Structures are given as structure tokens and as C-alpha cells.
Image (cartoon, rainbow, N blue to C red):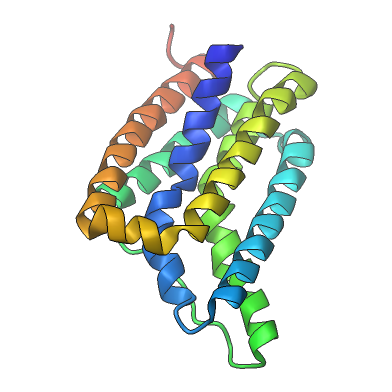
Length: 208
């Protein structure tokens, strides 16, 4: 159980990628003062937590409703993780949209929801992690009991990193963040291949 928890936690942190988000966060919040930026972080974390909670509670039922076997979802999740890892390794820029003009409070709320909460924090990769583990064959309760604290720790790390983003950027520098993202991308690529392999075994296509 302990090994499983740390594996899930590491996966959550790598996919969430708090360090890699720093340049994008600083870019989209550059025009706001410190108080507004802190407010954006809090709202983004809450929005992301809400989305994660919905998928944690209903992910297994969604797959059952559409008749998707866990093995098939493992393979699709592995492909998605590999694409994310590819972007991390080759430094492909994340796509973001500029929020529409309007009052500062409305505009900051829009930034907190999109693109910060979705898709930067609670993106397709992290939602796939949730769906994968809640369909891992264990009971929903046992899966949720391990996954919930991992997600909360991930959100806490994201909160701390974003609050200290300017300091971290000065300490690590652009090159430091660049190297860390490459290392996390390599680890995620290995996890993606393993997930595809597990999916093939689950579907009976490959013998263990």
C-alpha cells in the first residue's frame, strides 16, 4: 500500500508538473498585482480540486456507462501520457488563450479557471491518472483512499510552488527548470509505456 501510494503521488506530481507551470503562470498573471495573483492561485486550486473530485467520484461510472474496459483506458492513458512526456522532453509550448477584456475581478476569475485550473493543473493527463486508478481493479473506496491524499498533496505542492514562483525562477533559473522538466518527462515516458503494457495484458492481447 505504501509503495502504491508513493507511486501514485509521484505520478500525480509529474503529470501536474508544478515547476514546469511557473513560466506560463508568470506570463499570464504579469499584469496583476501580488494580491490579485494570490487570489488567482487560491481560486485556481479550488476550481481544480472541484474538477478532480467530480472525476474521482464518477470516473468509474463514466467508463461503465460508455462500456469502456479498463484495459482500453490504460492504453489510451498511456498514449496520452507519452504525448505529454514528449512535449516536456522537447519543450513544446503549452497552448493558452488570452482572456477576454473586462473588469479586473471578472478577468482574474477567468484566468484562474482557464487556463490555470483547466488545463494547466487539472488537465487531461491528471484526469486520466484519476480515471486509471479508480478502475485499477480495486474497490472504489480503497482506490479513493489512496488517490485522494495524493491529489491533495499535489495541490498543496502546486499552491506552494505558484506562491513562490518568482523566487523559484530566480534560484533555479530558466535552465534549471528546463533540465527538471526533461527529467520528469523521461520518467513519465517510462510510466506511459508500462501503462500501455498493462492495458495489453488486461485485454488479453499480451501474456504477462
